[in-house]
Length: 254
Ligand SMILES: Nc1ncnc2c1ncn2[C@@H]1O[C@H](COP(=O)(O)OP(=O)(O)OP(=O)(O)O)[C@@H](O)[C@H]1O
Image 1 (tube, rainbow, N blue to C red):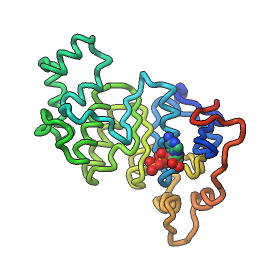
Image 2: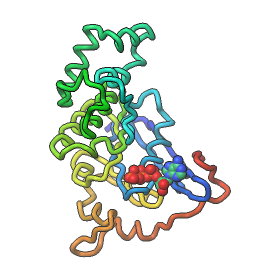
Image 3: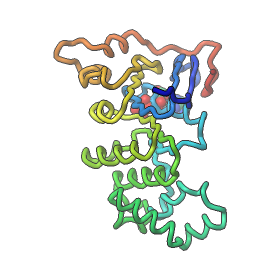
Image 4: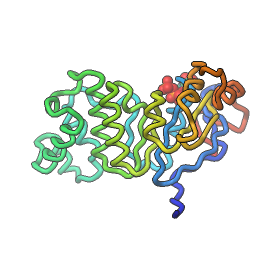
């Protein structure tokens, strides 16, 4: 099998805020074609890691941030269209935002249908539910039409059926994906590789087929029937360090 090119690489990367090291000597290589789930308890450093990786390839990544980053007073159409701004001239962008041309209108109507947002396409997003807003953010990322998808809990506000459906669409349309999420079933069923973080360190990095749901439960502090797992032992042995001189506040050292 052909070895795919390396797209992202971190070597002993650290991020600190004040005295607090929130990413702690993380080394990582991600190749084209990989579908990677980032898991770990709240505050483990998933978003920080995602941001550091994002900075390496901003042009090729469709990003769906945790905060959604929508413009409240604009419509679903306008918010989703903004994902594709790079593909249009300034004039064409302005025109399409104000008076959508047939091609953009058709593309985004189809996308809205895929996302279950047909009825909301022309509504301003401040009138939408949390799950509908999340789907608009997914739509904007899909409309970027990039080969890599980065999502920071991109389906956390959706019901289980929608979460499955939309994650499937996202992974089908992006050959490479790195997605932070808390749902263990989604992590194990949809991704080839799972990277588990605790206290800013990678405590496990393996093929999803080598992890059980109990392993992931243990990471979140739930005990399995046996009380043992690969992840619980690793997480327990990783205290949060404060940063030594080698780390710079809010910046990565490669
Ligand atoms: N701008 C910041 N200033 C100070 N501390 C920060 C900042 N951003 C993140 N942190 C801290 O860094 C740590 C890691 O945060 P991060 O958002 O990466 O965690 P996470 O695993 O994505 O959490 P969650 O699952 O809740 O989204 C947390 O303790 C957080 O408080």
